[in-house]
Image (cartoon, rainbow, N blue to C red; front, top):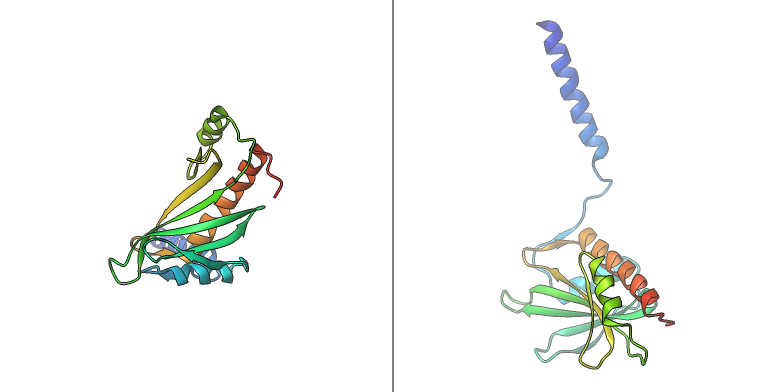
Length: 166
């Protein structure tokens, strides 16, 4: 019986220390209600120095611009103001004005290999790519920056597809 207690105690100690060793060095900052200025701060704190509020939309919400891959990216905010200034969604967006657009088949093939973003030809016959991010309930800075970085990788692949030389 003492052997079982010893083994059980050793197992608990090992599991406990494994949990401590696997814990991240610093915890992510969680933001419960996300406002546009929180997004600006997260981007700037993570090396996106060129983030700026470029304009406002028809609801007077800020439109953020920043560089992503070799392209100019935009962040649009949606469903803001229901709980103060907090926003429920945002959209990461990159569009390219070009004469030689990719075929619909090339874009469909591209989309088939992507999980979170979508590319399409807009109403001006230009290729665009976008990704929606839900902010409802909050988000951590680590999760958001990883989302932007992943979108940046997708944008780079799309730039290759459309042979963009930004």
